Image (cartoon, rainbow, N blue to C red):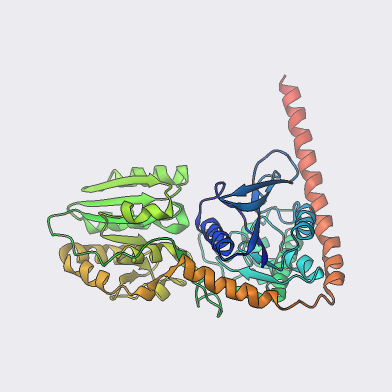
Amino acid sequence: MRVLIVTRHFPPFGVTGVERVAEQTALELRAAGDTVTVLFRRETQAPPMPLVEPGSHRGIETRMIAGGGPLHSTFPRFMSVLERIFERTLLEVQPDVVLCCHLMDHSPAYVSIAHRWRIPVVLELHDYYTVCEWARLQRPSGDLCPGPDSGRACATYCFPDQERSLERWALRTHMFRRALEQSDALVAPSQFVADRVIGNGVALSPRPPRPAPGPDQPLKLAFIGTVVPHKGVHVILDALRKARLPAVHLTLFGVAVESYMRELHESAAEIDGLLLRVFGTYEPEQLSLLLEDTHAVVIPSLVTETYSITAREAFACGMPVIASRIGALPEGVRDGENGLLFEPGSAFQLARHLQTIDADRTLLGKLAAGIRASDWTSVPERAARMRAILRDVAERQPDSHGVLDELSELTILRDALSEEALRREARAREHAQLRLLARR
């Protein structure tokens, strides 16, 4: 097959979970004999308008859309430019099928454009981006959001100060809903999200269950993932403050938001017996070695996770997981069997769990022994299942009837909103230059 993969970022310019999954898929498809091209974005501030830079990564042909800056909260800024780039890429690559790993900072109209050329599309749902600009269904207040309500919730709670906010987010909601409806296959990592499930692959060799640590050792915990408030690392620290354990090590693996990290260090300094270590970024293949001395991984998410690759990585390392009882996490973490669950945000419940495993170290060994081989999916296994879906979809040509008319209608409103935003930006730059001249 000729496969065009669309994703937000791509290594070496992106190293979070979705980017790693896209890279794994591309490499495995190429190894199976398919021709793969990856279209992705790099959010540089210059040039001011997006342009395409051809390249390659580990033998995979890439097309990087550079420039334009971040597009978060600016919908539909640059959508028309991105759509032209996507359509030109379709004509140059001539794929049999398009795999959209993630549409963040891309246009939801890609699905309709591909169908206009009778090319089928498979859309992956790694998070809530198709219904939420924040991708996590959480409002700025911290409250969980039940959904966009046709754009009204977005305009009311998240972007109330934007001009024509209701029109903007109603349009976004409609366009992404159409992308979901028109896609030839939807693939999600958990039953919590959708029926067609392919768990994200773990690039680790399985390890035997970890033996229970001795009572004289400090309890050693790890957090894996992006260190941001909605991932709940502060809940771990609050729980450790309440638990008052004699000695505990907590290591954070992943990219950290600097301001949040400062808060965590300040909180950790006030907890007796705690050693907080920050490792930063890592390669997935290194994780087994990095977790060698760890007793359990804690996943204290405050938002409804659609999956947890870190839980599966921990299981592959023979390590139990202590996680929030929210979203898709209970699908992987079986309470009392391969891990423990607590109510999201409840530092008290987490503290009780930590006190229990600290007092009875044999419980950690029992939980580790409860990990099954089916608790994670290997990268080759995931890629084989994805390839089967792509091949099945590629054999069918989508019906393009009505696509052109709807695209034309949506384009009128989208371009009006986009041009209005560009005019505001130009006025803002002009005012900034005038203020600068006035100070001189």
